[in-house]
Image (tube, rainbow, N blue to C red; front, side):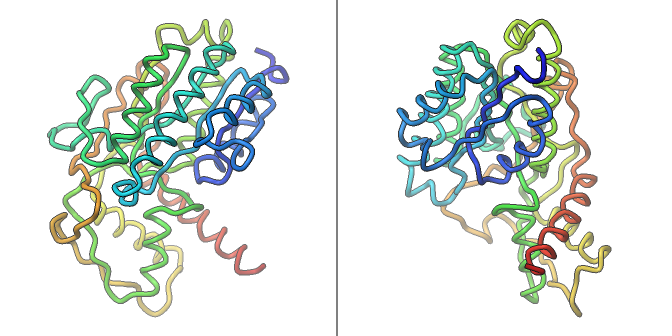
Length: 312
């Protein structure tokens, strides 16, 4: 498809992934970004109107309810945003013959499996957030249009609210940080996810048309960084990278590994969040970098972002 004719709609404006998609996808065509108040995932009619107006060839849903602990007491809102919202988008994509891309989570699994989860493993979410995302996955599958559901994990970046930015802030402010060491996953940068999304769109658009190119390759794909680490190990690597870049005062916080039971939260978390990327590598040729490689880039980008904000 000719670049100038490819119309891409990003749903979600201010989140960390939405921002990265806005940097990547304009290279592939004409990008429109919608978000609140003109398009509210809690107001299905506003989403329908915005999608129909866009006449998009590709709809990328980067909007989500991501407050995991808050979802336990705000369950109806989490389901409206994470389940009903994607269902509306998938319906409109099908009616408009558009490719629909949305993102899911490792939290659809209970973490009891010893090895990385595959796309065919049976989900069993431990919390309301995971249940809401799973309901969205099932709704999109049921609508049966041209779709890609990309399940990722431990998303972080130089913007927004995430684990990396929290550790970088608290490492300077506190003397000690207690971090869970018995939950394992793959920290995945929002930039890597956006780049992979662009790669998939480019690949499909370069063939005989998006929908014809997708055909039997539609479905759910795991999409995470290579390798895995615990939250404690991730925090340690963040601080080591801060030290390497001279981002420190006299002393940074001491890290103390703890178990999940020592850090109670409203929402239960899976102990094993590892996802196998074999299917997306084999089928679409997408390979994300090792998590530690991306970490260095994100810490640098965060340093630049914070310095820029401070200068203003």
